[in-house]
Amino acid sequence: MDNSEEASPDPTTPARDDTRIVQHPTPSSAPSRRLGPYLILNELGRGGQGTVYLAEDTRLRRRVALKVLELQSAFGGQGPLERLRHEAEAAARLDDPGLCAVFEMGVEDQVAWMAMRYVEGETLAKRIHSTLGAASFSFVRLADTTDTTLDSGAVAPSVEGRDESTLTRGFVEWVALLELFERAARSLHVAHEAGILHRDIKPANIMVTAGLKPVILDFGLARTLDLDWTNITQTGQLLGTPAYMSPEQLLAQRLTLDPRTDVYSLGVSLYECATLKRPFEGPTREALYQQIATKEPIDPRRLNPDIPRDLATIILTAISKDRDRRYLTAAAFADDLAALREGRPVAARPVGPLGRLLRWGRREPAWASLVVVLMVALPVIAALGTSYLKDRPRVLAQQRAEVRRKLDGHLVDGFLSLGERQFVRAIDSFERALALDDGSPEAVAGMALAELARERPEAALAILDEHAAADRPSTTILRARARGREDRRVGAIDSSEARDEIDHYI
Image (cartoon, rainbow, N blue to C red; front, side, top):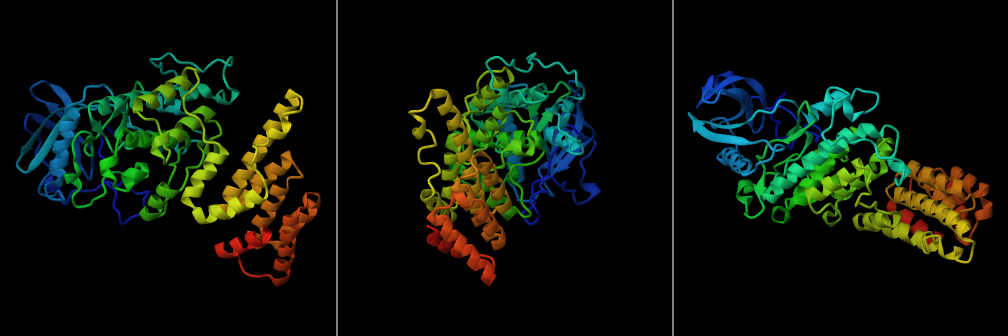
């Protein structure tokens, strides 16, 4: 499909169904074969914001994409027409090959139309969908041929001077993805520099040409950064596609939006391309909103281990809930993608375990206080495992510090998962910690507490007995609690009972 339209989401249906097609009421409402100087050839696609046709400009003998809005059947009064006019005005201010140009707009017999550049290709959303059935994801397949020549002439970075983590298997296959999104980010920056915020960046609005060049479509929800366009949404209607909306956009903080909102949406699109999953999904729209507002995304490397570590860091930086941690501009986003593609160090830095814990604590204060009390009682992060090595030989100190760093990371992952009631994942993290230090009382206590939370006191006792050498007064108390639980066989613990248990445990 070319220059296709995607329907607006229906708030009464599950969030995943945000790409449905809205049919016009009757065939008789279709426009005539000609609108103004444009001869309609065939339909390209239709959605909630109108229908797009392939048409011929009879004056210049060129093909265009003609967006048509039937005013008689348009819902929302003058709102749809105003958005179409606003889209034309916004796009007309832009001059970049990666942005879909608008030629002119008109209204004829209760039909509004807008002539745009016709882009041959498929939307990124359709390309992603065609890849879902594959055994593994290779973005090069999106180029129609595996020998597509990229303008950059980029190759995988050399091993010398590079972290081995970025040289994962098949790195060359990621070059096409990096260049595509680098181009899209630079085009987006052109729009921002012209004072235009897109506000609806998503794979369905990114056309991919045969040469693997992106073209950003649909500026219908765009707003100018120097003017107040809130009159378009006076009814309180939430415009956009929720799965790709930034937290601040979702909360309708329109007056505070800036280019970092588009950076977020482009980052979500990159996440989906790299993993074939969206970072946030929910069975209902309300559940999706809650995830976007409160949950951290799964590390993309957990979904696709072939993703270079630096790319995962770039993605997570772009989609940070704290917009002050995102790239300040789309150009900065593009620069990091280019750096990775060319084998140079990237500017983005991963969030460490302590930073993750602090973020989670702001979102879940009740559970965080429980976990923090436990971690204070069992010193996990106090000195980050390095201060006691200062008098040891340097090589040994570095080795032990690295082990301790990994140990701390597993422990923090475990306690975070425990706080989020992801008990199986918590146990897995604590087991990894024990593999590094089989005498870690923190890991033993964490595993036992997770088993108690799963209402498996016998498993908790087995863990405590197996690692009796790691006993402390606190683990002794936990053993007593497990024995009492096994004898009484009480019901599953709730958060208040868990908090009381930790108080006893301390």
